[in-house]
Image (cartoon, rainbow, N blue to C red; front, side, top):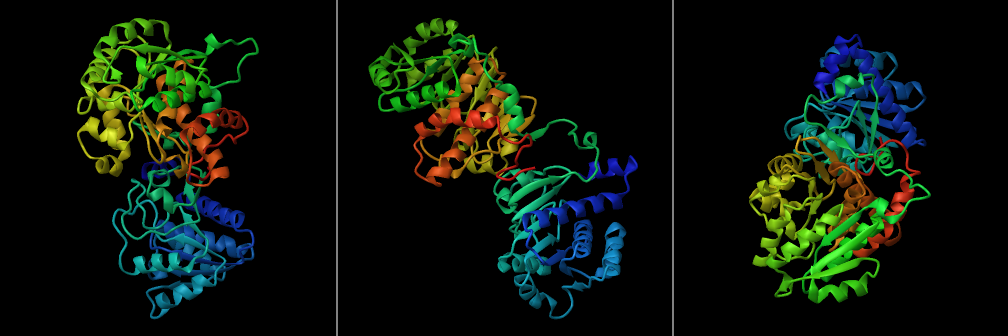
Length: 515
């Protein structure tokens, strides 16, 4: 953002105009979100974020609202554009009250408690360390007041560069992100402090915002619509792909059923489950719409000798999903090793990942598209690290795993990330805690397989499946609340999510907000 600001200014856009545009977005969003607000308190920091708040306070005052302005330091110490806006705020009749003045910090909670809404303009994208002293006290007062808060660019206390928390942070009701999303707007736990996120164009040319190399984007409804157009009236099942699902073992036949159901509900034309012969009847009984083929087994799991007939059969399929419920016995691992030579796109989930713990480069020898779908624990086993390390920097972890495996990797979790070996990543904005239930990932793997079999590129198949999978969960949450989901219900809701996609707004939504 610093580089983009500088590029815009070099291109002839005055820095003061950028600040005024930011303030206009901030003021407009406050009035849109809280139209009944009449009494507003703006708390402004010492830098340009404070200048944004001062300009917004002036604009709100000019629109007839009663506005009180508190500054963290001496208002006479502002420099540059922030100083200009401090002067203009005073000319508009606003008093700038320094919190450094005796008694003002103690009085701040009372003033905040009487407000209809609060503008948080203490600190923005430049923060790199935890707030302390008077800044921390101001944040605490804002949070304790219990009033609606609109944050300028970022809730104060967050770092723009990470989803981790530095220390005390403002809990915002809404955040107006200037020019573009920052990592804190989309990565948890920072995302949870942002409330609804609105991206406001402040006049920086789009070309100045494009990343020089590895990109990070947020999936949007328009993306998925474009990749999954309406079907032609004369379509038939073969048009939408033949998918093999290699899954299940004794006691884990449900994983195979859920994956196959997810594939069918995502639109696969034909699905065949390859499983240990002893559980074939169980799968047929649970899901008659899928075909089955029993393979040699040992101890209730696929045996090594099943690899030859399996690889021969896969020649007739457009894609395959492997892993749900397979187990990691010696014979099954040997089969999975040979499966990597299959001449079709392949989704590796669950035990098809665990079988290669510490060896992600094993996937790099594949000549056809490959999608890996680890949760943080599986990613940690592949990378020989810990789940906490993966969660600490999810973007770095998914990029490292994608590069080492030469595969598209979908790192599951809140804000799932899909990454290509180039390092370009896409964050999924849909989903709900309701989906934290056994079998949810099996359904997702099947949906990815369906889109691969239908002809989508690997990265698009993963992004589209994650988006619709999360959307299905959101639709179910409206009826069920945040707990008690059965994974099979997710599969059943996929067609509805796909249908609803046609009516979603063109723009995307970071986390649970909009842009």
